[in-house]
Image 1 (cartoon, rainbow, N blue to C red):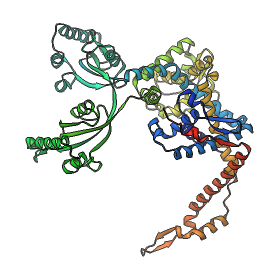
Image 2: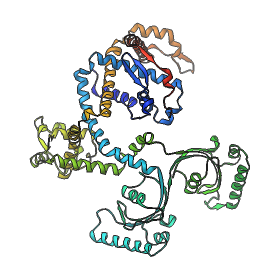
Image 3: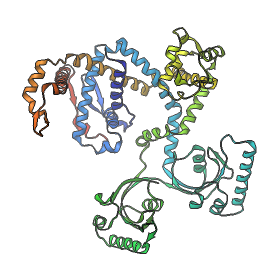
Image 4: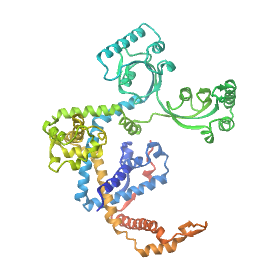
Length: 585
């Protein structure tokens, strides 16, 4: 019997390889690319599967037709196995159904959160990220949890600063005089260019609500304190630029003091004039550049995102046009002459949304949005921790010990594990649910078992059940996207079962196979003996390696015969002319 965790890992790999969200032009995407018996694979389905495999749309577009054909053949083999397994009724297998049910319990909450929170949020982020903004701020320190007196004093200070701005005082001068931001002496409050998702939500929302040269008339509260914010620029965003450079490095003496700065500048100016005069930029890099890292690539720094370079370089690179040469530009390293070879604009929402989604789910904003949503559901479904259940749990532990000090599975009897700790409309949280939570969630491990910690564990254990309760109300089984995801997972389980039962079970490697292979191929297996002479390894030294190689070959032979039989049973017709349309606009 295959262990459950191995099955899940195998299915996860298959699922990761074949699951993504990609919406193509409907007319093109609905074209039939492959016929497998009476089933059809559309161009859109192929694009969806291939996109996840290669990672992003740009990579998919860059792939050759032969590479797409290779993947299509693999996908056809996958679909043949799935079709055979489904028609034979393998999906009704009790073990497979148990795994599917468990997957649904884990997937439904994620799908629910994506529908209820994430989709709207990433659409808003995408619209904002079409632009980049430049802002300045004045920070008034006000820690979270500050006393009422400190809060009043901070707001009074912020109000007095705003009044100075209303009186016409220069923002930079006021920032220099009053801001608690430690960088203010260097930047006079200027935060340079950024885009949505790069700062805390309260600050971001305030910036994007301002018009150019406007400032907030009320202080903006964030986890860092109070901010008075001014929007100094807003423009369509360039995602990255492709540039090369020549670096004329600063010269310093043994104490680190800069020497011959005028000579360094003149050398950079000479390079700039040569480049502007038409000399090969690559040749100038090889002759003059002191950047050992980029010199072998002719000065190429690749595709550089905003804020990745020193600010003077960043500013020049994002202002200049493709093909332009700029310089000399100062940085902490010396003087640069830059040539711009291209730039990347913001892509379509469908192209960008998976990246934005991944980034958003790493933010504090997502954690806060998730927590608020769960709390709302708890209120809706009448969730409550039961005093008698809490008292029982507390009686079994020492509050001076941590969660990691206990093996809760052995601490509680089977009867104890059924004791109810919390309830809600349609469900309960039991001691067993806490034990399951602590297996996968290590956040509580170092916490002392106070009542607050126990309440936290109970609340955490309740999250997925309550989200599942909401998902049930929303009847996701009728949602096409949800159903497709479940079907993909089922298909992964089915293919794993086919591979194990139909193919690997037939792979038998006899001792005669190993000895015969060794005798025919012993020259492949050599080592250096103590005298430095090349000699053959013994059969015992390579037995495991040969056995594995023979198993893999026998599996391939078995799979080939099985797939050939399936192609006879389910004739495959490939419309290659449709494949040429993959990932075209």
